[in-house]
Length: 114
Length: 112
Image 1 (cartoon, each protein chain N blue to C red):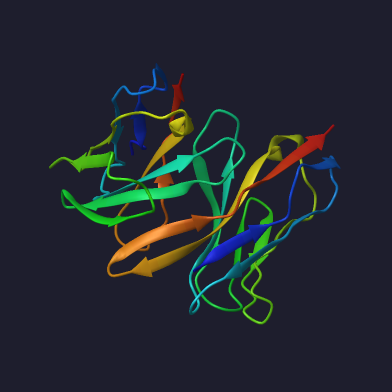
Image 2 (image 1 turned 90 degrees about the vertical axis):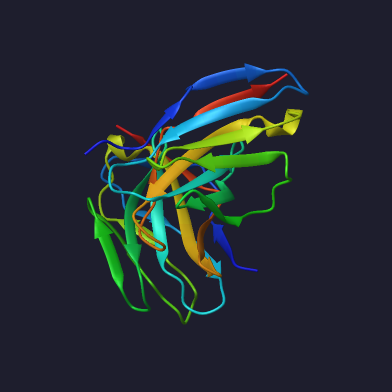
């Protein structure tokens, strides 16, 4: 079945450092891909998405490119801030008989130090 | 625009009891999905409701059931609670099939 694999955390960075969180997927076809972010005590918020190969999703300085050759959707940010500390989830959407369910990775915790 | 709201925020139950969790979907959204997020894990799909009918189900036993009401709000019911049911339960709504999910802040269920 479809699955998402993320790099294990926690990832600890200093403010203004470069961030990469790796995500690879296994899927039938070419599903839409997403990054969600979860701040402490909150639900998940959509960070960015890409719906087809070579699409680049971007938001709030974060970027991810849909790479079908490597089945990857790595999240990057050029300069992280303390406020970026959160758990990041990579996900794909699986469509079966009219049902659209999201399959999430296990999440990667990011901690940014001032 | 009102977002997804869930109640209660926290709940403690005893093994064998039953629980009902509630969710109001975001304005304009007609599809509601429920996810279970165990500690340190990603959310797992429980089921989805569209136009008051269950529209798909994940790998959860029948003691997990739900309802969707005409105003698109929803309930998740869990019978015969087990210790492993302790988790954060997330409700999410969206406008149609593959549009992005909008999540509530979840209900933290603890089963003792």
